[in-house]
Image (tube, rainbow, N blue to C red; front, side, top):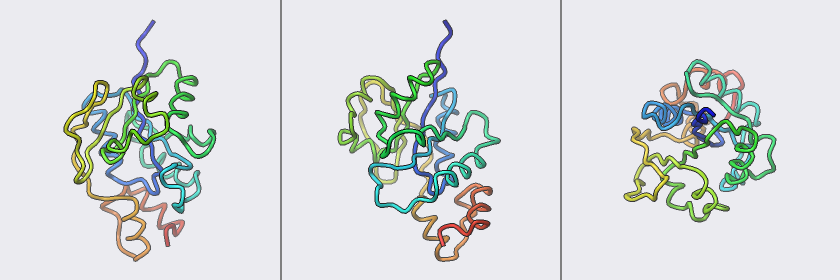
Length: 192
């Protein structure tokens, strides 16, 4: 039997996708921590239930358009068919059942790692899946348990929240997002 495909999951609302997300995904591939990265668009993050989100399909289309020419990175709408809110343990179970040819690896920010023990079924995730933690501004874990790897990745000091603010203020966002995302935001007059 052949080895399973190592698939890193980089989940988020991607409201909108920005260059920091792509830097993380590319770093995972460049460091051979996975064979591919799925940008897993979540319809409802349990930590962000009060956030105004664009329509799921618009966010998916923005991610898909931005990554279509990047080898090894693809958009995934898998969570759209799962119960809301999207709990990571449930998503991992469903993905593993649907894709037995893949070994899924969770990719999260250091800000989420420091509160990981508050995640639903965090112990199940730790027992059954490898985790890649990427550094965040003012948040870099010093020690990690077995099965958890710290990603060597440039810090990108931008957030989707800041991009939405810039758009609302009529400021340019071109240096923070892929060109296709900037075009979609302008064409559909999003975040105004």
